[in-house]
Amino acid sequence: MNNSSEQLIGKHPRIEAVDALRGFAVMAILLVHNLEHFIFPVYPADSPGWLNALDQGVFNVVFTLFAGKAYAIFALLFGFTFYIQSDNLKRRGGDFGYRFLWRLVLLAGFATLNAAFFPAGDVLLLFVIAGLVLFFTRNWSDGAILVAAVVFLLQPVEWYHCIAGLLNPAHRLPDLGVGEMYARVAEYTKAGNFGDFILGNVTLGQKASLLWAVNAGRFVQTAGLFLLGFYIGRKQLFVATEKNLRFWVKTLIVSAIAFAPLYTLRELVMDNGAVVGQTAGTALDMWQKLAFTLVLVASFILLYQRRKFSAAVAGLRFYGRMSLTNYLSQSVIGAFVYFPFGLYLAPRCGYTASLLVGILVFLLQVRFCKWWLGRHKQGPLEYIWHKWTWIGTDTVSYTHLRAHETVLDL
Image (cartoon, rainbow, N blue to C red):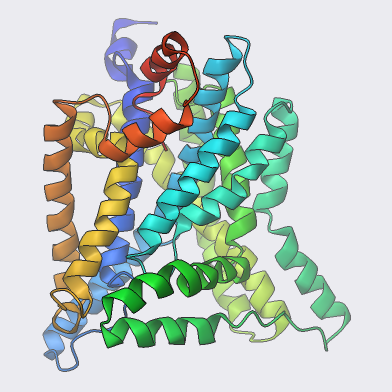
C-alpha cells in the first residue's frame, strides 16, 4: 500500500469509524425524537406563517434524512457488535451464544428503564426479541447468514399478505388495536400524573410499540439488519482496506440509484388504501429506507477516512462509545423538557425550536461523554451491562474480553 493510501486510511479506522457511526445514529435518533416530542404530539397552536413554513421545512429535512434510517444504522451495528463479541470468545474456544442470551435479558431491563420515560415503548425491547436470530444463526456459514439477511429484508410477511389480498379481495390485515392503545397512552401522558405515566409506559406503551413494529415491518427488518451487521463483521468490511473502500463506493452508488425509484414506487403504491397497497407499500417503504441507510453508512465510512472529516466529527466517537447511556438519558431529558410533569415545553416548541433543543442536548451529552471517558474506560450503563454480562467469568478472562470490547458495546 502506498503512502497516500496509508494517509487516507489512517491508523485505526475500523474502531474509530464504528464508534463515530454509532454516535451519528444516536445523535440522529435524538433529533428525530425531539421533533416528535418523544411521541407526545403537542405543538404551538398559533405560530406565525413564516415560522410554520420554517417548521415544515425542518420537519421534512430531518425526517427525510434520519427517520427510519438512524434506527437502522443502530440495528446494523448491533449485529456487528455481536460478531466482535462472539469472535473474541470463539478464538479462545468458547461459545458466546448463551452468554448473549443473558445479555439480551439484561438489555430487556434497560429497555424497561428507557420505556418508563418514553410513552411509545422502546426499540431496545424489539432488539431483545429480534436478537434471538443472532443466537440461532451464530454458527451458520457466511453465505447462509447473507441469504437469511436478504430474506428478512425482503419483507416476506408483507408480501404474503399482498399476494393473499390479490388472490382474495376479502383478505384483511389483523387489527392489533395499536391506534386505540396509543390514544390511551396520550390520555395518561396529558394528564400529567407521574406514577400513571411510568406504569402505563412500561406496560401499555411497550405493548403498543411492539404491535406497531409488527404492522410497520420492523420485526423482520430488524432481524435482517442484525444479520447484515453480523455478515459485515464476518467479512471485515469496516476495516479500511483499499478493497473494502471500493466496496463502500459501489454500495453508495447502487443504493443511491435504487433509492429514487423505490421512493417513487412506494408513493404510488401507498395511494391505494387496500390491503395490497398497505402491504406492498410497507415493504417498499422499508426498502427505500434501507437504500438511504446504506447511502448514509457508505458515505460516512468513506468520508471518515479523510482527516478533516474525522477531526470534524471527533465528538461522535465519544458519543458512540456511550451509546446506551446517551440513548437512555435522552429519554429522561426529553420527558422532563416536554411532558406535563416536567417543564411542559411541548406546547411552546414547534419543529424548529425542538430541533434546537435536540442540538443543545446533544452538545451537552458530548461534553459529558468526553469528561466521563477521560476518567473511565466505559460509560456508566455500558460498564454495568458489560460487567453483568460476564458475571461468573474468571477475572483473567473478563479482563481480556473487556479490553477487546470496551469501545463496541451496543
